[in-house]
Image (tube, rainbow over all chains, first blue to last red; front, side):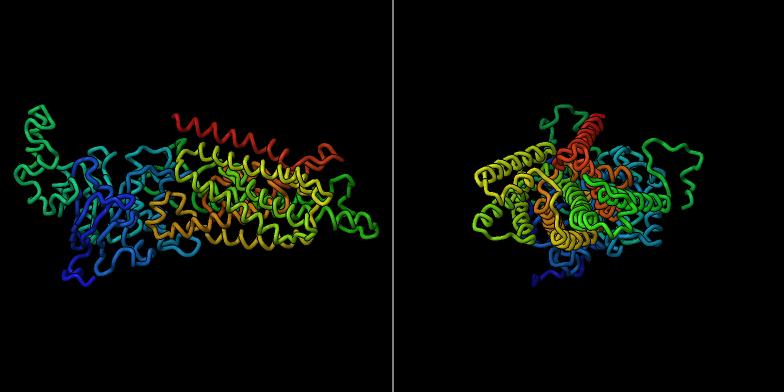
Amino acid sequence: MSKGRNMKEYYFSTNKMCVGYDNKPLIREVEITLPKGEILSLIGPNGAGKSTVLKSIAGQLQLIGGAVYFGDDRLGEMKTSELAKKMSVVFTQKVTAEMKNCRDVVATGRYPYTGWFGVLSGEDERIVDEVMELTHTAEIRHQEFDKISDGQKQRVMLARAICQEPELVILDEPTSFLDIRYKLDFLSILQELRDKKGLTVIMSLHELELAKLVSDKILCLKGEFVERYGTPEEIFESDFIERLFDLKEGGFLKNEKLSGYIRQISSQP
Amino acid sequence: MAERSQTPSWRPRMPGTRGGSKRNRTCRYITVLILLGIGALLFFILNICIGSVRITLAEFVGQEGNETITKILWDIRLPRAAAVLILGGALSLAGYLLQTFFNNPIAGPFVLGISSGAKMAVALVMVFLMGRGVGVSSFAMILAAFLGAMLSMGFVLLASRKINNMSMLVVSGVMIGYICSAVTELVVTFAEDADIVNLHNWSRGSFSGMTWENVEVMAVVVSITAFAVFLMSKPLAAYQLGVVYARNVGVNIRLLRACIVIFSSILSACIVAYAGPISFVGIAAPHLVKKLLNTVEPIWMIPACFLGGSVFCLFCDLLAKTMLAPTELSISTVTAIFGAPVVLWIMIKRRKESHV
């Protein structure tokens, strides 16, 4: 805590964070510093540990070393009920919600704000409806959650996370099941919330072109340490992305045309 | 609630929709609760009136002159019916808790071997103490049953760490149940004492021979536990969406899990201590109640489950007493006849859904 760096400048920061499973470190010395109202994307090849980092930040996985800070407060020392009002998550594992319609699922995000028995107030109901309009999930509000498509579920779970009125939202591959229209819609919602309410976003993305488009900061993961952390301009310079994904000529891909795709993304303004 | 412009009112309701305004839904829940309450009352009265000696309603209400009838009523039928009411509810609630805990619709105190563990502990304590001429109090029985239930629960939890598969978890529970039952049988067989004749009846499950003292203790223990469970409605609701999202909204997962384990063990222990292991009620009653309510919201499910279990058990006990009167069937025989098909129904339905 008595580190020289001033945590207050940043809304979210990590200090020598080390993450992994069963006390086996996977990624060491992760240093993230994020001001309020910025979007951070995690990119990197499959298995690079993006989900592990996100789970650890969200307090779902025990840290192996280091610390995570929300302003001056250290994760793990905050009250869970306080944290619930600050941070919400959307993770990749399948959710089932027996006998619930989509609106019921979204409404579960109001949990930190309701009383002892979890009864929604009129204000809570209004927020649920508002968020469903914003996320374009209002038209499926009456549909049974267990019977909608994976893409629709992803949007409902985002709505649930926003319903929690967080300051920070953590999203693990939030666009994986979405068609291109909803991918863009999804990211524009995040940008809108960032600009209007100062929402801070930390997410993993596979779509590099989208990450470049929407992020304020990008964290590249590969191997045991953070490969690079910086603005999109810094990340997408020269052949860094090709190296990150081992796509240098004659490497992983044999097809010239396909390996050229990555160069194209990097070179776009 | 007024329809939003996004949802045109002319749109036909699709099969996958779950509509209904909040008020309509609440109406349904309250109606179901009232119906279950009436059902419980009805079967309670039937249980008192019907038996080897038939008692008319008039006698039940006003007759005080006939001493035998008063005695039958007051010393035998009333405590028994009260016990069935309390324990049936407890059993159903224990099942509901375990189903929520394991996210598994066919979990219950009987199939997971928790009842059998409790049974074993009670049998051991009874044989050991009675063999030395020491009486066993109600409370000591519950305590023994609770320890046995926790022991079985410990094994099931260990197994569930290794096994993610729903049916395999139940199979391991059934195996634990078999082991405990075998030990119980062994103990009971070798202890052919006059005092222990009752034990044999009890080890197969029966509501007979309840005293008011029994009823008082179980009423206190079960009502306190059931109330505590009701107070957990909110975290239980969050838990239904999975551990990750429950933790995210601020639920203390470890505490909640510990509470579920302890409360379901107390409830199971109460049933076993007084009535022995009773099969299938813990699965069938919550499932039927869920279908009636058309929701899984704990705040409605918990009271409805309790009442549903009471109705189910009162109905089954009535049959157990009367079907082959004067011989009494073991309660598990009857609950299995009505409960096992429900379990089959759940499993077949889930299979179908997972293959769509």
